Length: 390
Image 1 (cartoon, rainbow, N blue to C red):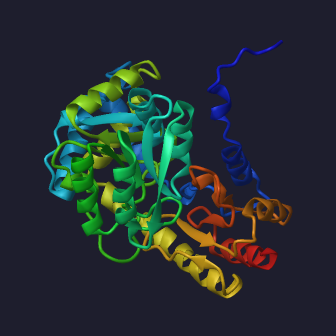
Image 2 (cartoon, rainbow, N blue to C red):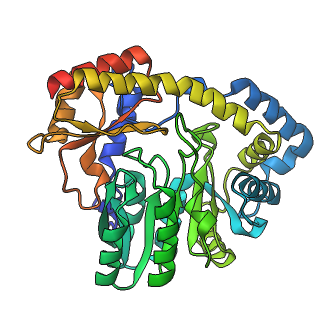
């Protein structure tokens, strides 16, 4: 049988993601690859307690179809939570629930992108977002990432060069893959540039709660003066990813368009999970759980940094993030980490080759290491093996 696929079908191939999850699933592999939370962080007893409460208080309603934007209870709760946490003025109408942040990338592609439309991403950027945008065939404009976040001078130069930019996609805090944080002055500057050059900002913030050192930084959304910033976050990293509960915060018109696109995709997100997350936030459990997760991850983060210093070559560069789940490594330009990956797998160690994080897939001497889902001893062993292979 000859399958008559669309031209876009081949753009949905995500071999790297399949390799990552295969590595995670293998008991013989030390996986420094996937950006996944540790199962040890999942609050099983709390989830059991909240599940029973949802059944007792909401019954069949929690198992029924619901609104595409999300149940009213959680939208109101998340608006209040954002307002209290960041001193903002978010309303229920500004919030929608998505099936993971990954769905939001696809929804933005659906409602904003025609082939060859200009969008701006950091170099490197989150591979999941690139995969979400790729099928809509945008023209990527890349801007380099600096120690304190995106290079805003280069960004403005490119905004002058390229007209009709639809949006900038950016991970604002503990960026995936580098772990970098955009400093406060740059956050304000990004909003000013969006207003001046008429584009949207998609601010992705899945890791901002996982801070081990330093002081928190307010989201870019807080400085939004014209409704140009859509803020994305998720409960995958601070509760459990299996519920696929994430949310978007934006101006009402954009939220309406996103809901229209979502309705034809999955109608609505897991209703039972929405009620459970609502209880999780309303009950004041989030901050307690974040503290437990940080207590679990921080020693692993410290071991990752000390192991890199001990085992990696002196000419290698790596980020030393203050939080999140990743370290980013830049090696000698002669080293191709896709080839290194094959050798590492032969030695039962996995990582993510950095090429997948570049919109043009043109840089091959980088890699991303994850420390959240592996023990301290395995981190030491895995980094030592990689150092020897390099």
